[in-house]
Amino acid sequence: MNESINLKEIKRKVYLFYSEDGLADLAVGLMICGFGIFLLLGIPALVGVLGVFAYLVWYLGKEYLVVPRVGKIQPDQEMKKHFVGFFINMCVIGLGVFVFYLVNRNSGGSFLSQHPLMLFGLVIGLAISSLGLILKTNRFYLYGLLVFAAMGGGEVMGTTITSVDPFLVSVISAGGIILVAGLIVLVRFLNKYAVVSLEG
Image 1 (tube, rainbow, N blue to C red):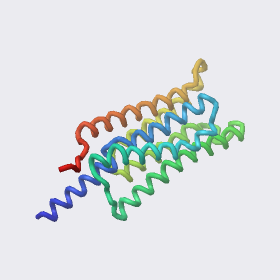
Image 2: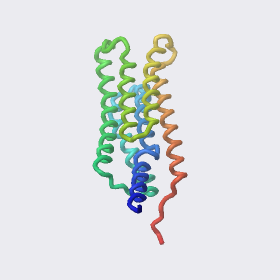
Image 3: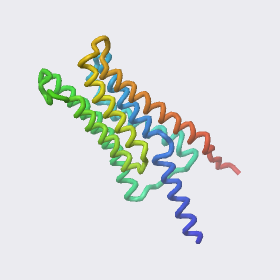
Image 4: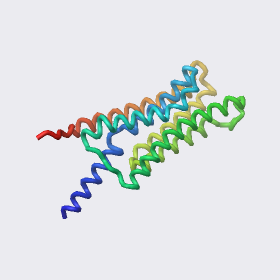
């Protein structure tokens, strides 16, 4: 009986450690929002480092916000694979964004000329949704759908709206929504779980 209770407690802590704190949401939001902002500012060369930056936000958040509340988790092999998968996902998304931008620009816009941004949005959306599988968190499926809709819709609106770049506005807005959602989840987590004191 005690073993069953301990196992449930371990599973609860692992779940808290990997998905309930909103840090992965913030990492994804920073990736998407940063992509749009960097392109808007004309500094696409920095897009490739977004994956590393997002990972650092996730890692440091775990160390300074989650560990004091939940404790240090020594993951089993399955959770280690999830951890590695998350890191690879962040890096691949960042690198993929950068490579796609370079290829599309260097080809004079002929690369996937029909709907390249919509297709790109689908790839990024699927990558984000895969985090939902890795972290076993359903809200990432909605994030993936949101990013796909933002990129595809922004591309379509770009054919009729010329006063602003609807693609960049849509992407930045989608990233902002994910950031806000992540902050809400993080605040709830911080309010729900107090820092564990080791004194006395």
